[in-house]
Length: 334
Image 1 (tube, helix red, strand yellow):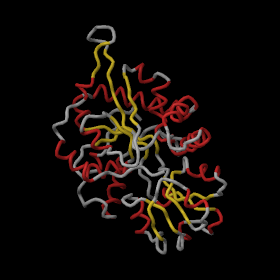
Image 2 (cartoon, rainbow, N blue to C red):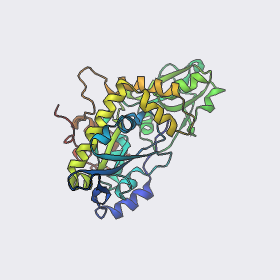
Image 3 (cartoon, rainbow, N blue to C red):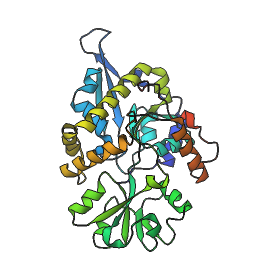
Image 4 (cartoon, helix red, strand yellow):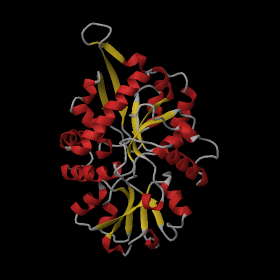
């Protein structure tokens, strides 16, 4: 499913406001027991899409009490196709958000000081979904296919650069797989954690082509905040990151409780079976290697992403420094 791209107008507004937005100091609730030492901090986290398994860790930490145990009163704000993640953060309406690493680079290129503090998904779930009877078995076979996709997503110029979309007709994507149900030559952009099973539930046998196999592999389900909040309230950021990290670890072990909450919050055709399927796929994406430390991020990965986006002319050369995009200061020592 498509996750929204950055909005240039809202980003411009955020640039104008950047530096004047207060941190979370105005978001702290009154004390629970009347003392000044035991405060419950009110925090909101903005999702970049409708609630799905890509947000499983925050729902898990909410429903199993992990946030509460850290003294955090957390509100999860569902997103949608045009959620202005950066603006929500810079305007102080949310203190944290979930997005993708390539969006972090775009936000920073537009002047928004958004910083990644945890990467839940190491291998990006982006794929192209094709019908099994389409004759397409690899990216090299796409010529002659009609692809439903959303302009502005960085994986598309990546595919064009490498010649995979030659002879492919690109048409708008409407957040649905309906177009391919009756057309074997229709493909859709998708996330491997949901659409393959949704298609099979509609009687369509499909094949997934993983874009990460080609080398385009930004971190996904990335927890982000602002540089302002990191500087002003590092202890609260540390609490939220650790609780969210633990929520993800718990979710990937046993997703049923959080999936019930996600299903109740999702009003866009999600099913319990798809959520269970998605959680199973997420385990492999979050732990691609036995040595993977959950949530880890490396400078090499961020540098590769920034350089690739500059080569694709998605951002201007030298517009973004990879080391500014993320921090591992709030993750366990690895």
